[in-house]
Image 1 (spheres, rainbow, N blue to C red):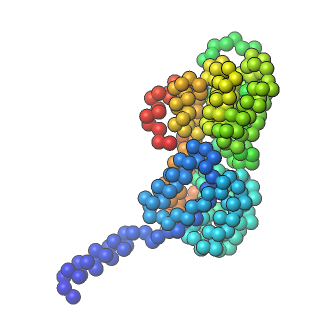
Image 2: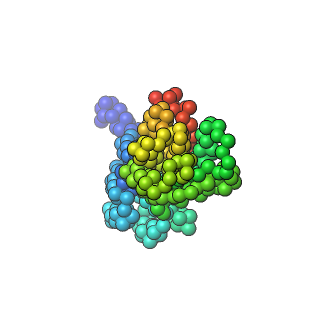
Amino acid sequence: MDLTLYILIGIFSVVAQAAPPPITMGFSQIGAESAWRVANTKSIKDAAKAEGVELIFADAQQSQVNQLKAIKTFILQKVDVIAFSPVVTTGWRKVLLEAKKSKIPVIVLDREIDKKDHDLISTFIGADFREEGRRAAHCLVDALKLKKENKAGAYRVIEIRGTEGSAPAIERSKGFREVADQSGVLKIVRSEGGDFKESLGKEVMEGILDGTPKASGGFDAVFAHNDNMALGAIAALKGRGFKPGKEVVVVSVDAIREAFEAMIAGELNCTVECSPLLGTQLMTAARDIQSGKTLEKRIITRAGVFPMSSAKDELPKRQY
Ligand code: GZL
């Protein structure tokens, strides 16, 4: 065998050792309900490509039934790992038991499932939603103080909630109320569901405005569980002659690009960051599972808080 062949075999064996074995991942995504979700999907697909993970991607159009079907299909396809962002926290135990029986590890990404079912997953990668609710309340108090009103009594807040039964909606509500109750400065006078959708945020706000006396008699601020619903509410407020960001303080969560644009326009007062850029962490976790590593049960993604004053400097740095 001549020298060239030896060298080629040598190079091949080194390369073969370096390249990790291929992974096939079945991912069930909630849908495309918000800019955050669209950015999350892009992050997952880009990371799969970069890491050489074969991704089977299923969009559930925000239906848990579709997610359950997708996960069952992944089991039949004998994928190496299943990952999903659960639209709501409950109803997953039976399908997770099926995945366990088929010896397929499961990673939960972004939204959490009931803690009682955590024994059936390898890890949960996502934000601390309750802390996001607390941060939203704190940045609302800061924004209200900037108005320098000698306000008697608590500021009246309208809450526009995310998807009913979802971890972010449940936990952001709890965190916000924790601070509101402790501070005595904020009081939620109305709470309506907007499903994390901009169109519903607008519709809900219009319904409230048409049924409630002007701001002086009705409310002082809006807390929306995500930026898209806040942007919908801002459009409704403007359409009814209110001045969002000034007369009515508006705060929300996600920190999408459009939220920074709204803050620069003086119409949004603060956004709490919840990063959708989880793709790389997801693929790393899948690789770690494949190489036999035991993962932390909870991988928390860190994030910041952006008041209106920070928007101009921050906007050029935004990645989603
Ligand atoms: C939060 C994520 C939420 C976002 C919304 O991690 O699940 O769902 O806050 C998105 O924008 O629709």
